[in-house]
Image (cartoon, rainbow over the protein chains, first blue to last red):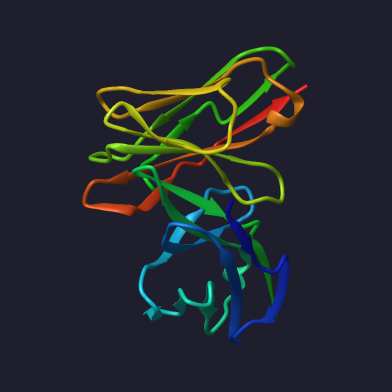
Amino acid sequence: GQNIDQPTEMTATEGAIVQINCTYQTSGFNGLFWYQQHAGEAPTFLSYNVLDGLEEKGRFSSFLSRSKGYSYLLLKELQMKDSASYLCAVLTSSGGSYIPTFGRGTSLIVHP
Amino acid sequence: ETGVTQSPTHLIKTRGQQVTLRCSSQSGHNTVSWYQQALGQGPQFIFQYYREEENGRGNFPPRFSGLQFPNYSSELNVNALELDDSALYLCASSSPRDEETQYFGPGTRLLVL
């Protein structure tokens, strides 16, 4: 089976930088997603990493190390609206199908 | 707004009943996936449909079934409802040009009493 681990909750200050880690143990790894989900809303796509390295997209960056089974999401210049759950999800292939497996999510609380 | 719509928004059923949830995907998206999200958990993959055929399934029993129609809209059917089926049900669509990027609908919140 797939195993994805991320912290349950993190807090940070407005304007600061926060790093949310995700570790995984899977077979048939294809790539790793990060999604943002505000309370009571649907997840929204943030990033998809296939190759090792850092990908930057505005205030958000995502890093992947396939050999270590490790990823992180880096949020810079935090804003109050960044308070949300951040979901790490691994895409694996099995029998010609692609199966996404989500972690439980990290609840980020940004305070003034 | 992702262009993905779901109906109904909320639903209350009793144990043993059957339920059908509906999803309209974003224009041009021929792949639809369904997820179950319990409170405080991440979404759990139920199954995916591509061009009207099931194209991958998660660890859910056969009483969870689905359909995709020629216009790529989709249904999720759950038979013999159990209390643990209470959750937010999300559908997500993706396009053939960008299969990895999924656009989620707002979800249907199902309560089983």
